[in-house]
Image (tube, rainbow, N blue to C red; front, side, top):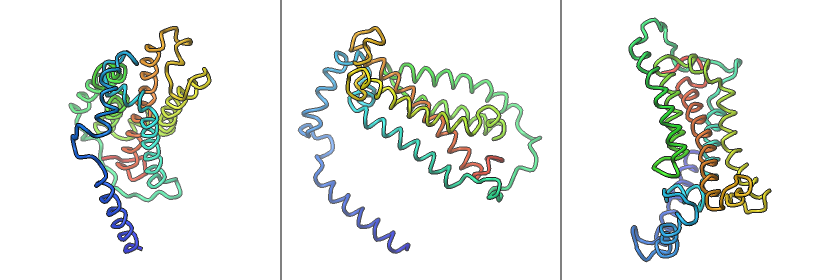
Length: 249
């Protein structure tokens, strides 16, 4: 089986390397993307979406389908790790040796983390809310928010994190993020537009179609942030505890 797997990897790798020959050279100004796509994004982003951050307008509007499925991939990755590692009560067998004593925990570290975590979360919300006007977005803000919860588990323990954010809540939030993203797209269709055509939201939001695209991007970025935050926490819980959700790193 290992030989067959290795053979498949080599064959697929060779196919991918062969396909690279058909791609334009790195930084080629005459490549199709540079000639037909990039110029339009650079010159029309503000007039089309009222969003000065071209990266966000490309990811969340012009290329919204791709970003939605990137969010789905993150969700699937978290569910896969959960499926492989999470142990039920019948399956539990300690993988990592439990900490014998938590009394020696660093009180200074715990106090510092409690001061730092709220600031991290406020900054995460700022990054999400201003991601379409400045560097940031749902992926970046979600990572910062997820890191704040992981810091709580690292400085205290996993049970402290689970008391604040239960495993079921984490899984629910990961799915809610994907539903927010897709739901906005379907709502646009319900209003007579295309899927993820945020300009269809203009009548509901009471703004111009251009500003509706800006607000629609904020909505999908919030959905991305939910999924990224939840999956980060879920991955830490399962990887750090071997699926036991008992003792962490």
